[in-house]
Image (cartoon, rainbow, N blue to C red):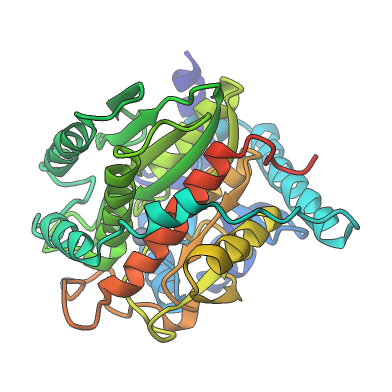
Length: 408
Ligand SMILES: [Zn+2]
């Protein structure tokens, strides 16, 4: 019923604006990006700099090419059908985003700052188990699929293989665990989700995620080789390495959920549905970490970016502290624009997010979204391993320290 109403609205909307086309999509993106491709902006918010538009397939191609040029993986978020049913629901989505941004600004300007976290030997020991050679092997494996794009007939072949690998990693795990393939309405591709249940605070969830799909030039990405080694076999591999190590440790107090999202390259489709459903079910997600491109050391090996827009300041602080305790990377602050990756889906639903990224946006891998995004000497698995250690520390600190939670 909902779908029918939505389709009625969308087709009327598109018809009345001369945009009727089954591929035309409702999106949220930065106002600046929408203006530069001359997309019509139907609603916008100046605080966040985010606007709502209705993109034709040609505009979607332009947007993707431009995003890539500007140094980001994604660049726009396709609104799930339920969120684009009416102007009031679109305004509500924009408003929700604004509320989150204002809350983070008040944290930054306010007197109360994030408390220090203490060094823990078990986290350092766990971080020492990360192996760059494992990441190399995993990225080689995932990038050997001709394409992981959601529009290909083989869209789920690698996802099913990934699930088997996760099952294998977990077979001796001492805690309660589950692997599942998550189906979506906006894509035929599935996400993979692994749950490691918490012992004393199982309803409090730490999410680690990254997209498993790949794309090649322009909208669609359904034909041609799309190895996607850096984007995003690298982040996917980091998640597997983290899972392998977590599976050797005792379960933590809070639950850890590791997610490999479907169809990020088509507008954050998988993560948007998951984040929306978590919000609707009032799940208590404490923090969400996004790993999307971690192996190209464009700003120098062992220098990474901490993304500061549409992410949470208290988690920026946490990342810096964890880095000092356990990793020793050089971290620079940088922005990537609205919807540069799946964290936008969570942030817009009111959850706290963090994104450690391979390099400053302007220095990111120039080969992504092409058949040249392969395992090569240009990638550094040492660099990617350091981001993995930082992400593992993030998971362990937040899942073991139940006093840590988003500021009110
Ligand atoms: Zn990506």
